[in-house]
Length: 85
Image 1 (tube, one colour):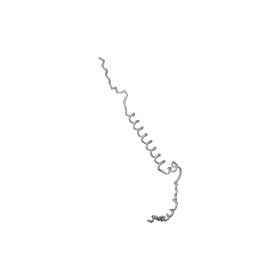
Image 2 (image 1 turned 90 degrees about the horizontal axis):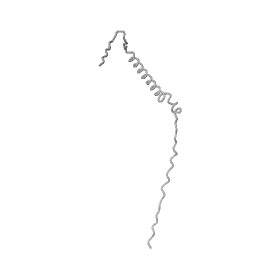
Image 3 (image 1 turned 180 degrees about the vertical axis):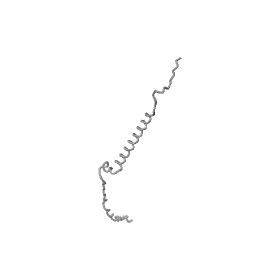
Image 4 (image 1 turned 90 degrees about the vertical axis):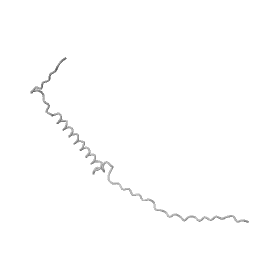
């Protein structure tokens, strides 16, 4: 059986936490870019630039229905019954 001894020598490599700091900076950068993209998308679709995305300014369409005509009086119906002889 083999035995491996690892001794921490004073002149050996030391992890100073630089990798964790770099990962944290990258995460913050991604979050800031995502927030900026969300704000830009909101500004385009619901801000002052919405008229550009919806094809122009306000469009008013006035619809005037035809005037109501008076209904003619109901016809008078007379029914003649045959007389008995």
